[in-house]
Amino acid sequence: MIDEAVALLACPHCGAGLDADPPTLLCESGHTFDVARGGHVSLLSGGGGKFTGDSTEMVAARDRFLGSGRYDPIMDAVADVADGHRILDVGVGTGQYLARVLDTVGDSAVGVGVDVSKAAARRAARAHPRAASVVADVWTALPVRTGVIDTALSIFSPRNVPELARVLAPGGRLVVVTPTERHLQELVTALDLIRVDEHKTRRLGDSLAGTFDRADRRAVGYTMSLAPEEVGAVVGMGPSARHIGSADLAARVAALPTPIEVTVAVTVSVYRPAAV
Image (cartoon, rainbow, N blue to C red; front, top):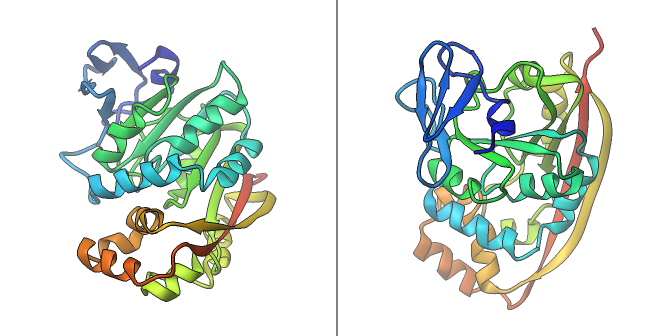
């Protein structure tokens, strides 16, 4: 991990800043954290998180699908609205969105990717040389210093609103990507997948109200023609993968037309800390 990224981190036990002393990170109170051989570090505040996050299979499916370029327009839209040189991705997954942002905003940018999934953290540690990969529970205090982040990303991820507000620097921004009801609608209907809540946009606004003000909102929509293996990957990386067995999913996918036209429909929103 590069020192500039470590400088954004905080001890999950006492909140003090962390310094790199390879192969560990340590704080001034003497708490130490081993950096895994793969490059990620666990900063869970207890023995383990409440949630386990994405499985190894889900992470592999996400890596395959995002690596295919099918979601590049979403990545480009996120990178276009990001700003500053200190980037935090909460629910970083495989790290591809964070890597795209770091490559776009400039050579001086550094990033921190946080995910409760160890499988995701292992993959994200390889996503970009200027990013630190951290295992942490986003529903507890983020292991990030107060007021040091220029852009925080929440890409199809849960949001701990008070913590996101705490870590943002003055003038910082929160970039949120959410699916609309039309997102992957052909697969949702044909494969009986988990549906997007029709009130998702309103609930997002309600959850941020009083803490953040919306500064920008843009729709990203297009269609993609997917082969069966791509359908398996996009379903396998999402929440429905937790409820459909691999054999069952393969059978459902095999019954689909080949290729199948699928709708992408998401909203990229930018929020600023609310004026006090």
